[in-house]
Length: 242
Ligand code: UDP
Image (cartoon, rainbow, N blue to C red; front, side, top):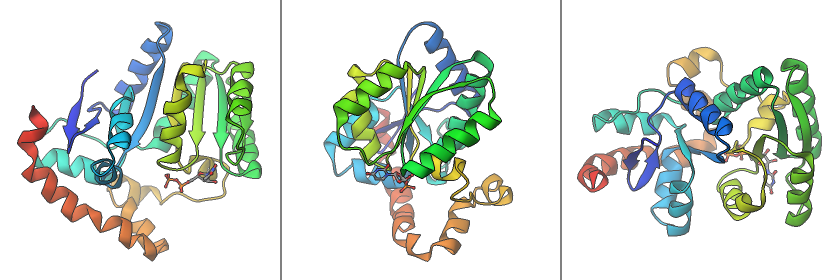
């Protein structure tokens, strides 16, 4: 798998179509894949937490979800061209599931949210099968894993927020029978219609962060990591090349 390292964190320098093709090839070859989203906040956090760093780097695909990751790569003349968000990739995997009649399982979010997300997905992607779903506040991990395996999904989406979902995936991956496991954060809230995404114009121009900041001014604390992150990424370019 191609990789580009940014401050010790691997990022997959493929666009969404290339990632979907690659995942489908791995499904056909019987290989398990894990997908996690990378943004500057996660990179900064992973640099202070070796366990998180190791688990991010051990995923099959680290998608460039935050615009800051693309800016850092461009400043360093790297290969990452376009943003691949968790929810967009999930929707493309749902399309793949629709085309290939794959079975999916949704794990995470509040019970009414995950149920509504399952309902909306089955209305839109009529060919895929919802193998099962479970809310994200169940504490009994054995129960969750055995329900997932009993339902035999091809694709498993885990929406517990970050980094909880990444740790959950890593801890349980060997026990899970699903072929693809993606950590999708708050995506079920969006798919259920509970939370609206930024209008297309903001998404297309890389200004989704600005829209979200307008809606939730307290996000400024999360977004303030960006300038320091970019500077550090530029200064540490050589270390990432080895
Ligand atoms: N969540 C969950 N179990 C928990 C904590 C959170 O299922 O113990 C869900 C929560 O209901 C929400 C999602 O995880 O649907 C978190 O979304 P958020 O947007 O905070 O995640 P991010 O994408 O920012 O990591």
